[in-house]
Image 1 (tube, rainbow, N blue to C red):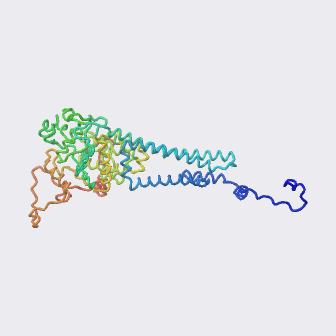
Image 2 (cartoon, helix red, strand yellow; image 1 turned 60 degrees about the horizontal axis):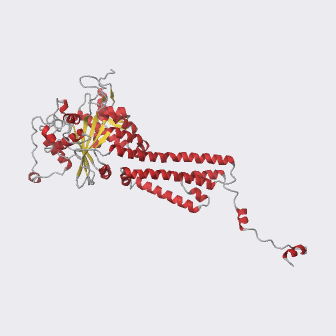
Image 3 (cartoon, one colour; image 1 turned 90 degrees about the vertical axis):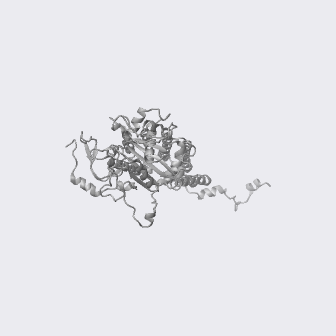
Length: 527
């Protein structure tokens, strides 16, 4: 009898045991009813911040672990670049080819980030989610993608702006004083950079370099000495082997006294002898590099020119600068002819926009060139302090465009890696300053031998004791030559021309500011 026949004829009684239910049915009976919408949306949000977590929550552990590990490696790499790897990041920033790869990498990572967020949401979404819930989830994902686009687009724009800056500012250019070599610094003990502030604004003929500073940087330590020369320095010498020494045997000289000053060399020299130095894109800068180098007894390697005509836009792009004002600083005005429009009042920690900062750096009515030189150095220091990483990142496109408009240099691209290393050393090194004002030299009749001696002492301040000094016999103080400058009142004896800390010159002088306010604001056009 078959099994089927047995089922038809079996007697009434206990039935045959049923087979056990499938394993899948038993698991389903114990499974939860499904992930709620709130949990899905919360995990989607977490997945945007910590990629991979949505896949882990959805049970796709391998994919989730892979995404999370890659994300943590990227975060670790970014943290390294922001801390101990800053030098490597800076070297990438001055390499146009590397920046192209960086831009491509940013685009790829941005697309992968979007895929992770969208894919994670779909993996979490329950089939039983209502249409309204799906619409809400879609809005959240769209909002997350839009929010993610901002940092990705910003990073890409910064990379492109930096490459544009390199292409514009450090483009291949001809120079009569720079030879582009694979190892620009070589075995040099110091690198000397000429810093020029050109005033070529409205109503001014050509560019006058009213700010002339040489930064001499030790290539081993980063220790830096800044040498500031006055705008009214005369008889600027040139190296004996330069063609300029042939046409200016007694030092630089123009058609009149005004055109014979240091600040006229950039404009007047090339106008008279345009091709004397051979092919060059900036003959005025080459004139000054040769002349200033001879005056200081240094070989000037490179120059950087900042045109004050666009200076205010640079400050505005940084969001302003903060400086100390120790006396009334005039706004415009011509000494002996026209009163200033107004004054910047003395006070500590004054935040200035671009226009006000330009007046602070430029004002000279009733004051000396040396007062202005001090303020310009303080303005440069304030710009450096204002250029914090957050500000640079947020405003980088505007800063890069502004920099290309107002900055010129003959630093070749091949030297940028070396300058990156140097910049990191300078940041933590000692920066001192020597100002050749009228307490140190007579700008109308400068003693260039004395200037070179002061430079040598500032660069190598270790005193060499002679036999008398070693025996305790004081060295007699030499008698000043007739007409030579004397030390300013209140200055320590023998300190004229001594190198001083740059920060001290820019500190707030409460006594001087109080005295200025007590004397009252000087006359101006509004009176």
